[in-house]
Image 1 (cartoon, helix red, strand yellow):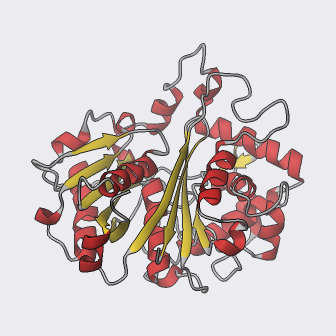
Image 2 (tube, rainbow, N blue to C red):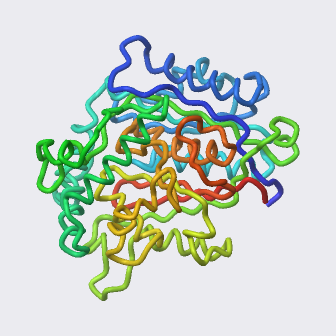
Length: 389
């Protein structure tokens, strides 16, 4: 490719369930101003703007059009991406490809969601056709409850293990100034006392609906070295989508692993010489809508063997101070502005590499990190970030 691509600007809003103080465009502008300040650039320096948002959740058609001023996109090229829960990672890929191609030297990507403006649950539940997508009409809660039950039965993990994951997420979120849910949970019993949504998934086991935005500025190698003393390089990206309208969309009756996470990580690892993720990568920000799914993903991304994720939890391997930190930001289970959620994973991983994560900076030196996204019928996007190439 003509250009190597670096992240030279990182900005996000604080996240919460409701933002009555701002409209959608004003909220986005907060993230745009933050990333411009971080990169020490002005809006006239940005050549193109790319957007990510699930507009059905707010019910606002083509939101990027009416906030062109607030997003700094007036009279500039760009496009809007919507690929379900992976939208905020798909737009990272779009910005990466456009800068890597040599078409632009400096581009901005913006992920956002203002969920107090609409009805996300209704939009998800009504997104599938009754005949072909009947399972999806239960909404995300039903699907992740089924995954939790399957994982419990196959791995031997208990509700106590899931509660430990939730405690880790909350401890980390309480150290993150941008996180939404900061509950100050102290014990497993506090999690286990929360009511069930659909057994075995409890209220505290599942992600919130958040309002917030995250913006990143990408630059070509020549521009990056001029703009920032510590650019974070995008080493690789991988996207794997799976057709939902067939039997066994989350597995293969032959027993062969066909989860999109397996396919995505094996491609990305092979291209980049990663043979042992726990030693070749320093930390990860993964898209875990529930604490049960976080354990699932440890195994799908080969952080451990099959049915062994709960052992990592017991040993504290994935804590901020652990051997392989996962989601030091608090993760999706603490903060979930859906159109921005995967963008935040990339932003947080980049902050860790720069050493700028503040109170939730991990204790080990981070030179390489991955950020992942999950959405729709088990779609996966992965981004590999490095301090140097």
